[in-house]
Image (tube, rainbow, N blue to C red; front, side, top):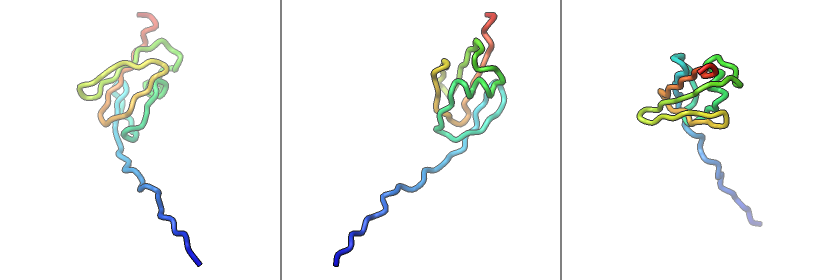
Length: 88
């Protein structure tokens, strides 16, 4: 009689690091490394998603802008600015 033993190949759970980010000066909490979409940033700022908006972000020395199709990885201390540019 033979036995076939299989090793448990499941990896240990990943460490979850909480992070804080800011949208137009308001503090929000998430998990570091989670993707944050344009729509989520806009909703956190209190704007309707279909508005004509400019969304910029700063992560330490790096920064950029977001479009409706984009998302960014959340890092602790990120700053997002959302501005209504429909009348600009």
